[in-house]
Image (cartoon, rainbow, N blue to C red; front, side, top):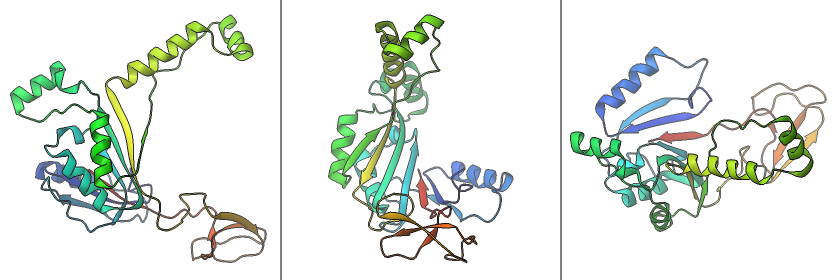
Length: 242
């Protein structure tokens, strides 16, 4: 999916079988059009085989709580991320290792099932060079209200019962899952992924950076003193997925 969105993707895994499966699925479900490369790299669990500051984003899906060396892993993430880069995580909660499923996996398959204690992760992330952390709260399905309750919500805001129900939704959904983002500093260069420094200008234009033709009254965008870019031509970001 990331590759189809125009990103250069590098998939990492310690399992040769998982990488082989990914490459097979890539062949069976090819992306449409001309897209950047999608590479598959074997990872020894210690050092990511990529240069420093070589990626803009890292996506880690239900994998970080399995590593034996979380501090070292975070240092590697910070090393390969460019300034302003973000590492996004989808992980379980602080009591994960005590669940019946985790206990079964540890006993049968000898896998690591760490608890996701966000205080410990943030302390290790700061030591690794990350400068900020954000969380994404998830909610359950939409809430249904009766006619009177909905009219009251519109006029006076949520009543105590609605607030309690929403609170339980948020707590229930986020008790056992953790979606968080580690940020490494500020971007070393400005591009179309941030509004900082951009301004709109109008006028006659032909081809801008070879990206698209514009009409006589087209709008273009300028970032600082850089070359104007077409408003719809967002820069493509490279990514590493763990």
